[in-house]
Image (cartoon, rainbow, N blue to C red; front, top):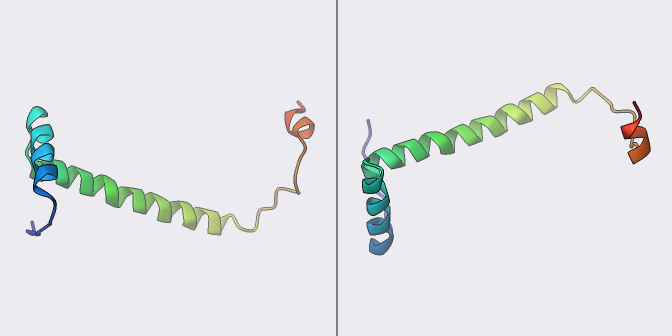
Length: 72
């Protein structure tokens, strides 16, 4: 694991520590969980963009009216 240094206002850090403590966790563990979530979101966006590129050849046939979309 790599150590990093972050800067934040002292009052904000104190609030964050208080929240982490109420969850029976450390601020470090909360940050690591946030980092996993943060990086996963980016991965999801990249996966979505790759999927859209791979489906680029598919055409919907144009715009549909509400009535056409609700036909059964």
